[in-house]
Length: 330
Image 1 (cartoon, rainbow, N blue to C red):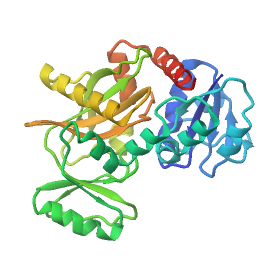
Image 2 (image 1 turned 90 degrees about the vertical axis):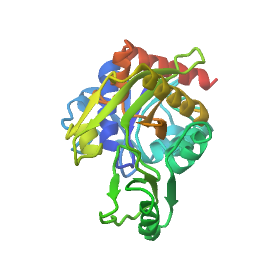
Image 3 (image 1 turned 30 degrees about the horizontal axis):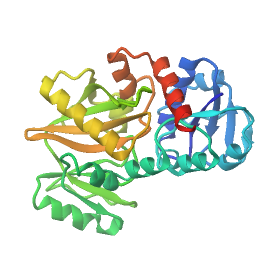
Image 4 (image 1 turned 135 degrees about the horizontal axis):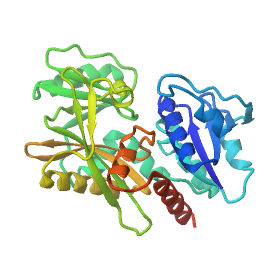
C-alpha cells in the first residue's frame, strides 16, 4: 500500500504540498498523510488535498483531525499491510536523513535515498567535499557561526568580484544571496556556505534509477534569469524573472559533460531512486553546485519537465520509484 507523505516541519512544506498534489492526481487514490508543522499526522482525503489552491503561497489546513500525535507514533502503529512511503517531502527532517533513519530502523520501505546519503547531500559543504573529489567545484567557505559570515564573505570578495551565500542545509532557493564587492553583507542566523560566483550557464540535471541497476541522466534544463534577478523561490515556483528551457539548447559536448557530472554526484553520494544536480557550465568546464535527493515533483518542477522531455510518463516514474524502494527494503 502506497502512503504519500507530505508537509513536515520545514519552510519548504508549501512545495511539498504541491508535489503531493501532483503525485496524488497522477496515482488516483493512494493514502495521503499530511505531517503538520507542529508534528501531528493527518489522514487526508485526495479530494481535499487537490482542492487546495495556491499551494506555493498558502498553508494547507487539513479538514480531518490528526490520527497520530507525531510521526514516530504514526510509523510505529501503521494501519496498513506492506506499506511503502512515497516521500513528497522537501527540506528539514523530511530530507536531511532524520525521517529516513526512522523508516530504516523500522524496516519500512520508502522512496528516495537512505539516511546517510540524505544527510550528506543536504549538507552542501559535505556534499561538495564528496563530489569535489571527482569533478570541479567552486572555492567555498563554510561558516557555522553566523557572526563570522561577514568576515568570511569579505575574505572571498578580495579574490572574486561576486560570491554566493546559501544556507548550509536547505533548499528551494530560500535564503539565497548574491553579493558583489560593494554590496552590503546580509545578517543571517544560521550556518551558511559561501562560494565564489562562477559565470556561466546555469544547468540542472535529473538522474533516475530504473530498476536495472544503472543510473540514467535525464535531459538537461537551462535556467535563464533576468538581469538583477536570482533563481530564488519566487523565480522557481512563481515564475518571476526566470525561464526554464527543457531540453536546454546547448552544444552536445556541454550536455554530455553536464550529465556526466550529475551521474558522478548521484553515484558519489550514493543516491537511490532519483536526484537532481545543479551545475554551472563555465568557460573552462562544468562546475558542481549541489544535489537534491528529494527534488520537487510538482507539476511545474524541473524533474517532471525532464521526464516528459525524455518520454517517461510521470505515473511510470512513480511506479518505478515504488518498485526501487520495495526492492531496496528486502
